[in-house]
Length: 89
Image (cartoon, rainbow, N blue to C red; front, side, top):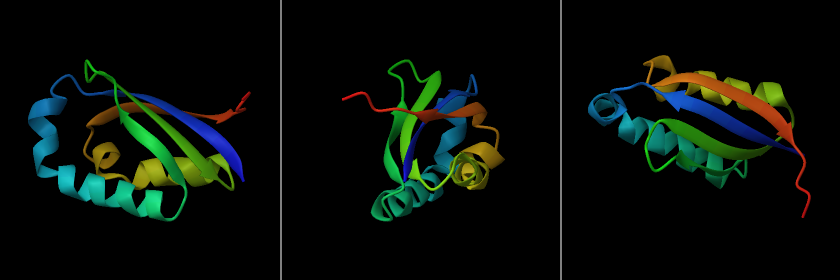
């Protein structure tokens, strides 16, 4: 299994828009965590960026999880990039 880093942006009105979708979003993240795919994910303190670490078979698998997330489908995440990551130590 390889590791991947996710880096993205939130919409400017994230705090107003996320409420209706937050439970679905968090439930999906909990499932990914339980399955061992998601290591950690969350916003920066200023809530403009999202950061995550995944362990998955492929970058495409992580990108598919992002595309399936309600925050992506509803435009709360406005951009997301996934990169293979090498854990140095």
